[in-house]
Amino acid sequence: MNRRDLIRYAGAGLATLSTPHLITAQPAPFTKRRALRIAHLTDVHVQPVVGAAKGFARCLHHVQSLPDKPDLILNGGDAIMEAHGRSNDSVKRQWKLYNDVLSSENAFPVLNCIGNHDIWCKAETKEAFDGGKQWAMDELQLPKRYYSLDKNGWHIVVLDSVQPKTDGSWYTAHVDEEQYDWLETDLKNTSTQTPVLIVSHVPILAACVFFDGKRFDGDNWNVPSRWMHSDTVRLMNLFSQYANVKAALSGHIHLTDRVDYNGVTYYCNGAVSGAWWFGKYHHTPAGYAIVDLFDDGTVENRYVGYNV
Figure (cartoon, rainbow, N blue to C red):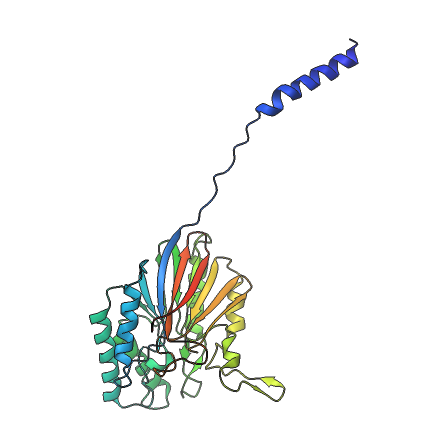
């Protein structure tokens, strides 16, 4: 055997001996784990007529009878039927009814968000608006109108969508400057490894707003700033800086939809009251959403009708 054949033989032998015995460690498959389950109840609109209190109680019973129970309830705003333009006594009765049902029929912790119907406004001024919002905060036991908290590996941000117009008259939907500065700082101070859920009463972004009423006229779509945030672009630009902002929940429209945009999923989650306690609102029955947050940052949102 010449020198060239010897080298070829030795190389083949090494390959034959070594290749079958190489052991490559395979990573264990990752199984995502649910970190938190939220029951998102929005637009309850409790009032002393049309069986609203009984309907709210029925919804709470449905949530609590689920085989796989939520960790908490999120009130998405509009807890009462109508504060704006009503008498002081009427608003007191509505809040008492809401809190009585909640305290007697619910065993879960509750996170609260302010809705436009929650705000009493005895005059069309900013001072009256702010006073009415404070009343709603007191009823909901909210020390701040916007806030954030960490829960089971998720960061939850609850916003205040409802602001008076510049002349102090009835509302428009956006995040005011004070709140925006706070939100910017809050996101900056949250670890990039912690997934973030945004909560607002009025949708930051939604598709259903284009089909609620006559929204197309002539050559233009027309969506009022009371239907959807007027600062949508500003907020989406902020969220785009933080890949850990995963989803946003809202109510207000009484319809359901899902919009995926630039890495964030926006869910509009119907209404506990349906069409203000008169059946379905368009295609959407009275219901609530079960929102599952997972440790890998994914979200599953399922709308549940409870009138069965």
